[in-house]
Structure formats: structure tokens, C-alpha cells
Length: 500
Image: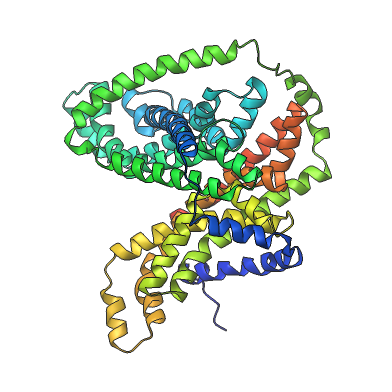
């Protein structure tokens, strides 16, 4: 009997099966009371409120958002490059340093990036209160570690024979290191670093929902008062900021100014290091900080805190990750397959842009208008937001690839959908699944956002523990989140290597 063999294309479409339990739970929790509010929200998108006062507030909030986002982006890129070099194997081979230092640094960076910036922000706000600098530090912590991982992976692709060749001509260790790593660093910055600014702006908007400042604060205040027209004014302002920032940075061509960029990089590293030292000293010796004295309690009574309810919340978080990942994988190719024409693609692009634009906390609050809090609601929110991101990548890759096979199949009389599936999508299935595996790492971290707002999983317990200053519980939750993220990262790494 022939065994059923799964290929990347079939796995992509089979992931839609997660929608069966989701649809059932959403159906039984549905209530019609918020439909009118939802209609008002949708209509307000085409009729935002505009007057002098709102424009003034919008400009002010956008300025705050950009300042936090750009500062955190610049710091995370600078230190990301620095720690990326330090965590690469080549660094230790050239300088003949003990390799165990690299393992220790990678372990530390893995823990830092496994915790979402919102969690860092909530913890810092609980200790130091609401402060403008909290947003920058909260975003920088995971972003530095994420950037370091990306830069390190690119540096590791350097051919080791090149190292030996430079050593044979008696090149100094420092010049050898800079000569080898600078080209992959510039390439990674151009391909990945600019995208991180968009991520920083979105993260700033999410943190603003919790009081850090910026456009997110105004969005949340408008939502609380159900002032949807003004809310859309701020959302469109956020979209304008993302688009303009991306276009301006694209104009900066590093390939023509690599020597100048090296000088700017060293100057920026020096200045940012001084500012970072200042902030570190300020936060350590800030007398207004709430004492963090629960380490002893944690060491003494940590096992007693792990109860049945905690394990249940842990399981909810894992299920939320799996369901959201299933939606993220399956929705884009299915939607493109069904609406495979010019108008349909334009509609998909527009809808995906809106789902990328609206922060997940606001999106789940909108869905809560006509549905009760549940894992399914959190999963569909997180899944749709990330599916909008994966759909953008899929559409770009499909547009850039060679479509000769698709055209040939159509000319032979094969249906348009079958031609797209077998002639176009099959070529992208491996790389698409590999990107979705990377995206699932981010989904694991983002469950904290939906947990805090949607009252599910460990995010809900984190909010409760922070509110009651139960730091021993917070530490356990952090380790739980970190463990899930690290295990997920290891699994996804195996999946990506198999798909390569």
C-alpha cells in the first residue's frame, strides 16, 4: 500500500484545518450586539475626522512615535552588529578566544530575544513608572538580540578558506575581521535592517496602547471613547509614517558610501554606548523605582507556584501559537488561489495592508465587540495579522519569479487556478514555508500581546502578577515564555534546514 506523502504545497493548504475548531468556538461565542459598532468602525475608515486640533495632535504623536522608533532602531542596529560579530564563530577563530564565551553570549541573547518587547515594557513600567525612555529600552532589548542573530548567521556564511588566505599574508587580526565581516553586514543591513525600522514603528504603536506615548496612546484613547473617525485619522497617520520612513531609508545607498558608513558606524557606536551607559546608571540608581526584592521568594518557593492553573495557561499559550501559525501559513495561498485575478490581487493587497496597519491589541478589541474572549478569538487575531505579513512576501516573490511554466500550462488548456498552483506556487512553497517557520518564532513572542488584552494564556497571568507586584510569579512566567520560544526556535530551525 502506497504511503501518503506530504510535500510543502500540500502542508501549506492542510494548515487550513485549524479553522474548523476555531470556526466552531467563534460561532457559539458570537453575539449580535456589537455589529452596529463594527459597521461604524469600518465606515469611519473612509471618513476620518480632520480638524486643526486633531492635525496638531497627530503631528505631535507621530513625532513622538518616530523619535522612539528611530532611536530604538538605530541603537538595536548598532548593538545588533556589535553582538552579531561577538556571537559569530569567525570572531573567536580569528582572535583565538575560548569558544565557550560564544556559547554563553548566545544563551544570553536567546533569552533576551525570546521575550516580547511588550513584556519588557510592562515590567519596566511597573518598576520605574511611565517614562519616555521605557519604550526605547523595551524595544531595544529583544531587537538587539534578534538583529545580532541575523547578522551572526550572515557572517557565518563567510568561506573559511578566505580567513586562511588573509592569515597567510600576515594581516592583522582586527583588519582581517573588519575585512571579512563588513560586506555581509552591509548586505544584511540593506536587505533586513531597513525592515526593522518598520517593525520598530509598529512596536512603538503597540507600546503606546499601554501608556508609553506616541500614536498608540491616541489610538487607544479614541477606541475607549468609541470615537472611530478620530481613531482612523491616527491609523492613517501611522500608515503614512511607515511608508515615508521606508521610502526615505531606501534612498540611502550604502554601496556607494561604505567607507563613510564605517566612519559613521564607529561614531554612532561610541555616542550610543555613552548614552546607553547613562541610561543604565540612571535606571539602576533611580530612587523612585519600586524595590525588586522577590528573588529570595523565587528561589525558596518557585515550585509551589507551578499549579494546575499555571500549566493550563501554559497549554493555552502553546495552542494559541499552533492555531495562529496554521492561519498564517494557509490563508495567503488559499486567498490568492480563490481570487486569482488582477482585481482580486489588489483587494488582497489592500486588506493585508489594513491588517498589518491595525495593531493586534486594537484588532482583538474590535472583534470583542461581537464575540466573547477565547483562545479562538486570540488565534484568529494573531493569525490574520501575521497572514497579512506573509501574504505580502508571497505576492512579491510570485511577482518576481519566472512564470514560463504557468503560461505554458494555461496555453495547454489547464484551468487558471490549477496553472497557478502547479506552475507558480509550487516553486515558492519551500521558501514560503521556511519564512512561515521564521514567522512562527515571532508569533510565539506575540502571544503575550493577545494574552494581556484577550485574557488568555500566560499573558493574562502576567498582567495579573504585575498588577499585584508578585515578582516571583513574573519570573516563572518569563522563564515559561522563554522556554516555549527557545523550543519553538529549535524546532523551526530544523524545519528551515530541511526546506533549504
